[in-house]
Length: 356
Image (cartoon, rainbow, N blue to C red; front, side):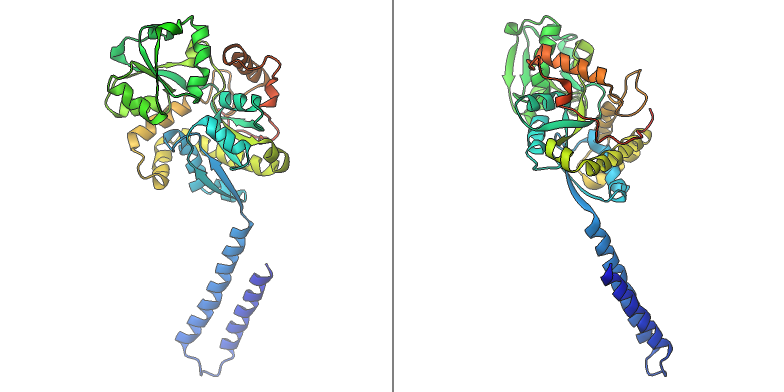
């Protein structure tokens, strides 16, 4: 600030000297001198403002796709900057990995599904959900219409592509138990997450475990008639993708996290009101994002925001959390003594949330 005031004073002195000049300085020189002084002031002021912004790295749960458009809307419209944050969005390689990175403090904040956060927290990783986004998860059995799979039990006698350790695979045991599926009759084919869609469309497997907002969209983009069986429709409606932070960050930087959530939710609210515009904005940052595929991914994400009882975005009650946690206890082996509030907190939530 002192530097800015000094430059302002110098600029005033220059202008004053010009006004008192006997004419030895030409008008062109006068204009250039004043312009230079003004530019110096403006540049220094901008630098000072930039220095005040708090740098925040936000780790996505996966590579950037249409479901992430709301965060790029918040970035493009200056919602983060308006609250004093200089946010960098970094891509991820899976919810479980993001939970570990955020828990270790590598990134201040991230996005991960609540089931992965619960699993990580139960293993001693200091991580919590600070803002649920999806009211229910987008995990799904993704298959093709012609494969004749209409329920989890129909996978008996079929080949199922899975990625060990990812969110859909971790929660799959819950679907198995809830639907009396005989796993011994399923042929599991383990592969990397990036290979699942290709394996499905080429017939190497009959179905894959993936996301309605990502994998299913990619199948459609390849010209196939996709069929999506959401876990939420087959007895396992756990809370889905959420904004997460490490326990140290929650303790030491609650106001920063609250600002991040507030700006992000504004981005989500804008995206649901103008999804086409949200995809256009995201393409400025991710030029390889195809419009139709991006919009389909965003639509699937927006379809997970609310239930009939929801009144706002991120409207999750303690009862909702307890129900979700009980499902994880029943189907994912979460310790029965593990309380729900050890992997989520509401202390960083803004006072006002965007209405449904």
